[in-house]
Image (cartoon, rainbow, N blue to C red; front, side, top):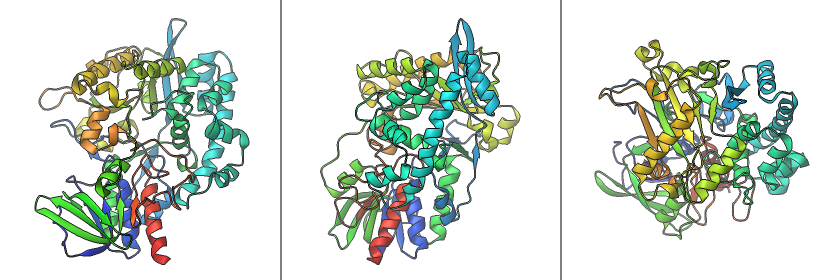
Length: 523
C-alpha cells in the first residue's frame, strides 16, 4: 500500500480510480505541471486492464479481464512516451461449422488469397467474399474518418456526418439497425454471424434492436486505430497499465493504492475528496476532481440521483492448456485457428436464438462465444518452462448472458453455463478440451470463469457491464459537454468508460478529461 497523502495538501487534481483512464489523465496533467493525486481502493493500479497469475504455482500471467488493444490512439502513446508494444494477429478469425455432414470452417486472414479461397470453399462461390470486401471497405472508410475525432473536442452529429462523408455508410451504422446492412450484404448465415459479433461484445441486443445499442458497440469495434485491427499487448495487458503508472509517477503524480474515495464535495470553485485507508480517514482538497469510475459510483460519491441501472452480458473464461486441441476440420491448423478470434455457435440464427432465450430468462441453449490464444502471438506471458513444453493460454468471451440470469445462484449458473459453453466448443474439436487443460500446483484444472456478477463484486462494474453503461455515440448530444467528460457538477469530470467515447482499453476518456482541465485552467 502506498503511504497515505498528507491530509493538509491541496492538489490541482485528484483522480478517483487508478484504472488505465485515470492513469492516462494523471500522466497528462502531471506532465503539464499540475500536482496530481490518484486514489485507488485496490492494492494495485490498472483496474480491469491487469495481468494476473490466476493459477497456483503456475508461471503464466494472463490478461485477466480486458485482453486486446484496438482503441488506444498512437497519439497517447507518443505524448506520454509509453514503452509499450503490441503485435498484430496473423489471423483475424476462424469459425468452425459443419456443412453437408463435413466439418469445415471460415478462415479470415493469412493473406487475401487464403481468405478468398476459404470463403469459396465454405459458400461455393465468390459472392460472399466480394460482399465481405465491400462491407469492410465501408467500415474502414468510417474508421479513418471517425477515429481521429476521439481525442478532439466532441463534434456535433452534423459535423461527424460531414466528416464521414458517405451517406450509405452513415445510414448503415448510425441510423438503421446494423442487422439491415448485414442482411443486405451477406446471404450466408455463418458469414452474417461473424460480421454481427462485433455488435454484441458485452452488449445484450438483437441485430435489429431499435435502440441501436448494437450499432454503437459495432462502431467502436471497427474503428480502432482507423483500421479496426485488434492487437495483442506484449507482456499482457498489465504491461500497458504498468507503463502508464510509470509515466504518471515519472511526471510527479502521487499514486495512492489502498485508498478508497468515499465522498466528493464540490462547490464549483474547489472540491474535497474524503478517502479511507488502513490508517483511517483523510481528506484531499483539489481544484479539479476526475472520477475514473462508473456513473453509478460517481453519483454515490456526490450524493446525486443514480443513473439508470446498467447490466453486463458476458462470461469471461481464462484457461491454460498443455497443448492446443486438434480440430475436426482437417484443413485448419489449430495454431492458426486460435491465433485470431475462434467463433463458436455464432451463426446469425444461432445468435438470434441465444438472445431470444436469454431475453426470456433462460440460459442460451447453444451459448455463443469467441476464443483466442494470447500466447501464440506473445509467448512472453508464459514462463520459459511452460513455453518450452508447448503450453498455451486460451481466453474465452461468452455472449448473451445478462447479469439477471445469474441472480438466483451465481455459482451454480456460472458452472452450468461454463459447461454448456465448452460443450459447444468440443463439438468442433477432435478431442475434448478437458484433456488439454493443465493443472495447477494443487492438481486443479487451470480454468477460471467470471460472470457479470463476479465483475461487479471484484471491479465494481455496474451490473458487470464492461462499458459501465451503454456505449454512447461519438458525437455530442444534449448535456454531453465540450469534451464528453463533463458532469452536472462544476469541477468534477468523469474520465472512466462511462464518459462519452468511453469503453474498451483506449485511454480516450482520460485524455479528454485532462484536456478539459487544461482548457478550463486557460479560460
